[in-house]
Each structure stands twice: as C-alpha cells, then as structure tokens.
Length: 93
Image 1 (cartoon, rainbow, N blue to C red):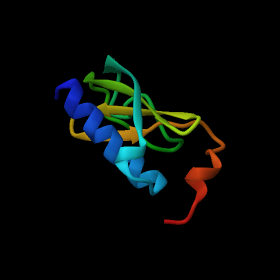
Image 2 (spheres, one colour; image 1 turned 180 degrees about the vertical axis):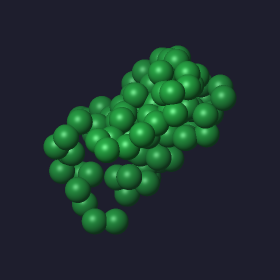
Image 3 (cartoon, rainbow, N blue to C red; image 1 turned 120 degrees about the vertical axis):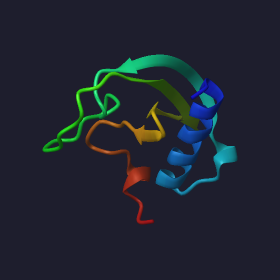
Image 4 (tube, rainbow, N blue to C red; image 1 turned 90 degrees about the horizontal axis):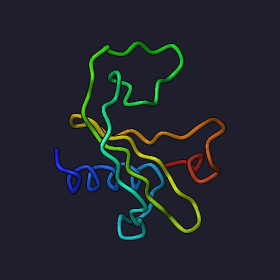
C-alpha cells in the first residue's frame, strides 16, 4: 500500500467514525511504520492479535482543532485514541 492509499483509507475510516465529510479532514503527518502485531499499535483489552510484523502507516488527521491518529496496515485502518474517547466519538451514529 502506498502512502496515498493509506491516507485515503485513514480519511474514510475517520470520516465514518466521526460522521463527517472526508473533505473536512486535513493531513498533518504520514509516517511509515512496521507494526509489531495485527493490532496496528492499538491493542484492545481482552483481544488477541497475530504476532506478525505488519508494514503500514501512522496517519495524523486534523478536524477543526483536534488531531486524530489513524493506524493503517494491510487493508485495515484503526482509529487509535486513548480512553476516554473524545466527545465527538461518543455521538450515536
């Protein structure tokens, strides 16, 4: 996956999570990463992940005054936010 494809995947994932238009998101930074497992650097409590190195990207996207980290690897993108989630993420879909 190219960095451009990773950005597209990250924008789609974040726009769906926040229920906003992709055009509202701007790219702050894109970094090539090798994730140590299939959690893409965002393990969830109680979940098990394949222990396989996964090439991908850490994409930082900005919406208004908030920057959101989206981790991309393989054909997946994961919004990687600490608990508690920002208020915008708690909105019903």
